[in-house]
Length: 476
Image (cartoon, rainbow, N blue to C red; front, side):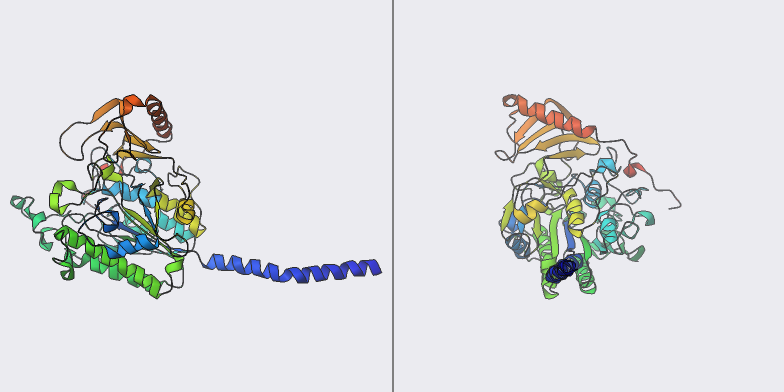
């Protein structure tokens, strides 16, 4: 009996000693559950790789984006999944190449006001995944994934929406005889693009001179209203897609002219977001991404941007069409002032965000996005091994490590036909970022490896109907 009592007393003492540890573990678990990071994705439209000061532009001033780079990470090898709007945005929100969702086409490169299709209900968006993880969600800005009610943000995981449903140059009502002059001296009345709140049109035509400012105000308001719970904000600017507009405070502010004015207002907008996060004490619990849907629209000359050293721009699968100036900011988590040359994609924002939120990445489909946490937190090696370059449904090129093979090439615009290459054209992007020197004949082993990677990828792709080719029914 004495031995039994002694054992009982020792057990009680051990449990009492361990109790604080159990309590600490429970407390840490609760803290982690309560401190799910907020996620903000700021997405520019047609921004070039060389358009920001922190990416080398000599005259456009971007102090707030420079601040993001200084306090966070600059990702120099980061790609969109398509060289034009609709498929790129579909990939961002689903973590999948657009060919898997039908959000691409060889006939119509993007959705138009007379399109009857949109993002399929079967796709899982980042907003839906984060909403399931307990997040409040908002979309502010350009959508371009379908303008019918069933395709709008509020039908795809967003609690609220404020923005335009497609590109700001659509619904043109200007006389045809004015030609391209309407882009040189743009006026609001030339386009009948609607501004929407949730599913209702609240202004038509949208006053694009104040659109960046109003998007920013809506974004800041959402942050203030949801500071006590985890939130996901998708802020998709309409600019610098032509026609270019800016608020009166930014007229003639930049040495780069109208285009520079527009970029500097976007930079101001970023500053407002970062400042609000700091004011609310949310900066160390919010990851902010900044990127673009595709490269600069070079055919508009001074009204278009710059891809820097990169070749070509929007619409092409050369580097200038798909490599994006990208920043990631999360004070206290992402080491300040770091530069990553690891391969990344906007599709990775999907997987990384869900993982950070403790959510569930869909397991019933192919997800092309990878978790970039090792890159962001530890400046380590990234899990992305390759990037596939699509133009519509055509696999045009593939990158693996520093090597990029072009199987098919075509300029962004014009009537020049698609040109197939066998063997493919090969570039070493670290040595030759401008893709000037074809070195395929010197590296047959690399050609063989990249061909095999392309064939392996294509085996994972199943044909699905194109949403971009569905016409709008008259009753819609």
